[in-house]
Image 1: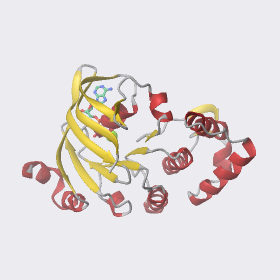
Image 2 (image 1 turned 180 degrees about the vertical axis):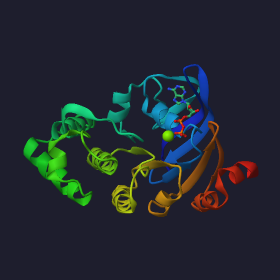
Image 3 (image 1 turned 90 degrees about the horizontal axis):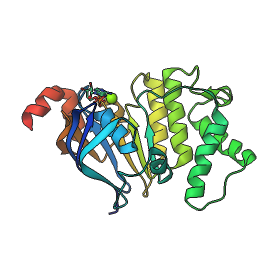
Image 4 (image 1 turned 90 degrees about the vertical axis):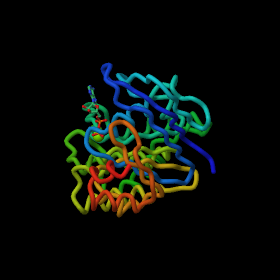
Length: 251
Ligand code: ADP
Ligand code: MG
């Protein structure tokens, strides 16, 4: 088994406040891991730290991408190396045309892996095919990134980006929040389509319901900045029944 991402005793602070307090996690190629945990346990912080977002201080430990520390890599370099983060709250980018944004991202990734850039015509075809499967209309594609999109549309658009970028490591932060049942199904089907032997995905969610659509290989419970339990998909059902308090007590 090939470890794509290894998190080793990771400690991180925000505004001098320790949030992550020793996280250990290994994501192997082909695996889907879920992170569950109460609000405020550090789930989003962990995803931001993995993606290299500004404002987070790593105070201990390491993050290895294909065996090499990636702490010195910028968010952009991490993305080009094959890491993708779908935000809990996708940002609107007024004035940034959706198609050129998507194409720039795809071409940056292609250049990094020594492939030719994709031309506009071929790209439009590629996007239309994937967008159709995710219920994303031509009108949405023509607009500026996320501008005027509903919550569900933003989430579908994030999955479209992931489908186009074909990352090695996909991190989805509460992709289910704000989705109705139909949108949840579309998003989950999209994620399931992206399961691949060379890819790993980290699905962060507060609730079990997403995990009945995207069935994870492993489930980890994050509490107060640490993984307090790890298990199989059944652990998610246990959380659903006994809540996080019961899980913490058992740990
Ligand atoms: P989750 O995603 O699990 O709900 P977060 O990672 O968003 O949790 O937050 C973890 C903790 O970090 C919370 O106590 C939150 O208040 C705190 N936190 C997050 N971002 C900041 C920030 N920019 N400044 C201060 N505290 C923060
Ligand atoms: Mg969060």
